[in-house]
Amino acid sequence: MRLDRPVGTLLLLWPTLAALCMAAGALPPLSLLLIFTVGTFAMRSAGCVINDYADRNVDGHVKRTKQRPLATGAIPPNHALWLFAGLVAIAGLLALMLNRETLLLAIAGLGLAVLYPFMKRWTHLPQVVLGAAFSWGIPMAWSAQQTTVPSEAWLMFVASLLWIVAYDTQYAMVDRDDDLKIGVKSTAILFGTLDRLMIGVLQAGAWLGFLLLGLDLGYQHLYFVGLVLIACLFGYQHWLIRDRQREGCFEAFRSNIWVGVSLLMGTLLELLVGTWLR
Image (cartoon, rainbow, N blue to C red):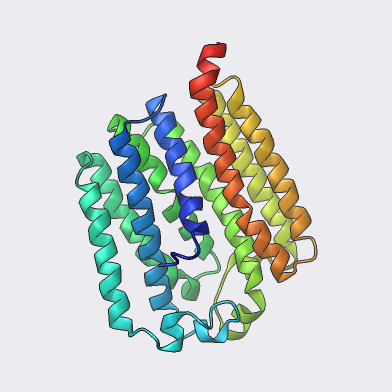
């Protein structure tokens, strides 16, 4: 469940909460904040479990993952499936507290979460599926607030997807040598020597998407300060991955937590303070 490594949970949580605030035009109801926060934790944990189940026969050949409990045999595979089912049940109970439209979106999101781990065998673009799965909380957040998913929600979804493909490519760069040996596919392998350029293109697309989102929502002030911080963080990440070393690539990936924080804080300050400035 990666309880000791909350990076993935935070990467999923911050943009989802930002979407909730955008959809509400203010602070969303506490009930929705709790449902989406706990739901994010449950589904990210479930995603980790099903990922380790799918990779149980290959993780032992990768430096970063060889000590995972399914790879070492410390946990039987059927125990992992029971844990996955329990986590999905928790998320399902939370989804039942939302409207019908959001519940249907939640079912589709579960399909993406289950599909992702197996895409590494079929395509060099598993990061795109992960991006869709990790971004699925965005249309769900808008639907929970408005019972519909407007164009702004889908614009944010696309921007988030591009950002996730960029940072998961950084993550895949850490394991690229091992993945080539065992036949696991990734965008890091697909991009090859163009990896840094493609990450930059994806980040530029994500940043432009977030910019257009702010303009569409009529934001005028502090949201765009958050975007400036995001641009600086993207630049810092390119410095970290300049030599394609494992440590630098992993640190670049981790720094995306602060990209999410900048997006959320910029949104909150725009809604709470920017309204007063106007």
